[in-house]
Length: 140
View 1 (spheres, one colour):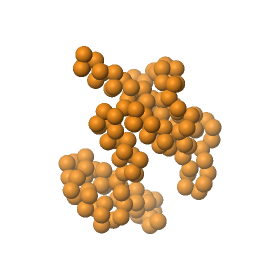
View 2 (spheres, one colour):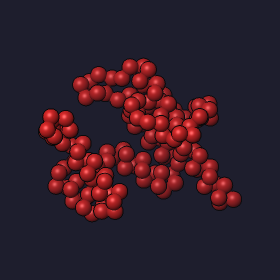
View 3 (cartoon, helix red, strand yellow):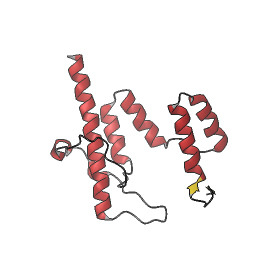
View 4 (cartoon, helix red, strand yellow):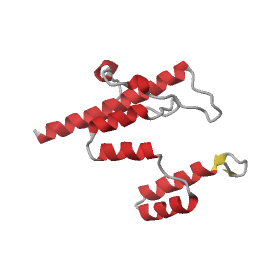
């Protein structure tokens, strides 16, 4: 893969993906789609698109099932600063199947890093279930 920047620090694909995501966020999905087509770099992995669609359409079980198949990064910020979650609330979901991330050289995260990734999956599951609950309350 080609690297960009003065020191060659930015992978080209990641840079293009960031631009595509920014264009979609700014309300130019047609321009992002054209960039995706021309560059050959998808702005979202297919699993991420499926997850996003499931959440946006209220398909909660599908969203949680897809979430458990996504790799979880251990180096991201907490999903929600009010996340003081009782992890037993979401333990019935199969979060142990969450795949750890490879660093690109085939090196998999340590158990401690994987544990942080699993915590992120639990937090995300909690937020999905919370949204589902709030929608059910709204329906009456």
